[in-house]
Image (cartoon, rainbow, N blue to C red):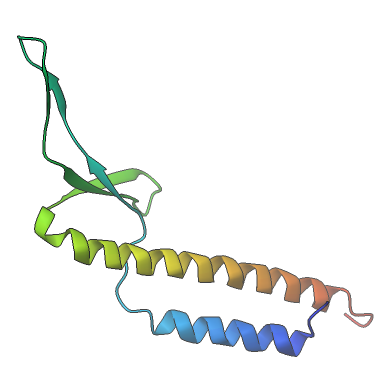
Length: 109
């Protein structure tokens, strides 16, 4: 079922309004890591988990920041908001493409 341009524009406005109210976010990945070390007696030591936040800077280079354990919960919530933002961004791009195709296919364009 093809949507009308008015329906596409209405959904695009809904997305823009939702994005405006998302608040603070982090776009990236929160990773849990552990160090492993083999002792002289052959046993293996596994450290307590530590957390890093991986993201891309303005030039597209991969960066990371160490996250203290006591802040992990807040960072997870901000990353979830960032994932929601990315999903809305993809949907908006798809709507813009579809709307552009509808407008381009009009006879008196």
